[in-house]
Image (cartoon, rainbow, N blue to C red; front, side, top):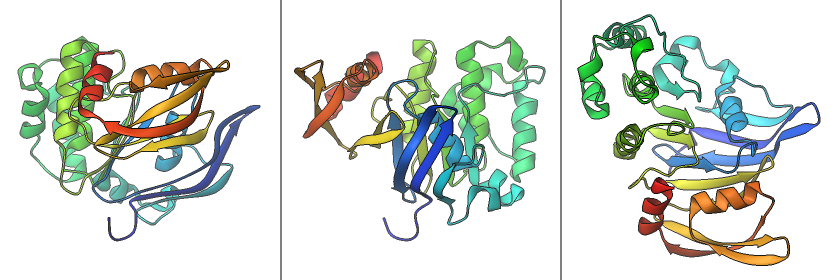
Length: 264
């Protein structure tokens, strides 16, 4: 894609005590691109997202968002251009859904959120307090708030984790439908059906594989001396988390694999 990347990370490293959360990570994400960060727990996905957003500062390396260091982006511009859904949503439990989305829209400078509510299936709970909703509906509200006013960059940290099947499918289909110039970065163990995204596989703070949209690499892993061929992203993530290493990759069709990964 032409022009400057929306997100550019070069040699980013971050330690928490003796734990190296990021180990010289470099990547570039273009305008309108959809990127999934995959990998086992502790692989560095959430830390990388927080570094991109300026929530955490790297110990070394360079991070740019819209060609600026995250801390240099003015607050008003950050609110308008970036939508963020943290792993633990921070939506206020005491507010009604309608009031909260009205507030977010006003702060961002627009007034309409009905289409997002319809697509995410939350119009029927618009007059209920957020604290009384199920986790699945709270996550839907959090995502609706993040996409109000069409931000240029949408960042989601494990948006499909610990959800009921209905919410997982509704949210996954909604995220897959987002197009245009919106750049999406999402960490997840679960690939939404029909989502065509570049998959960046992380392990131990490093990028260990990249998978282009529309194809999945047949992952060749070595597990305690045995060679294992894996076509399922969820299974590959589990094995890497148990200590297997990725040796090589081969291209294969993604459609059926995505469906299996969603059901995993």
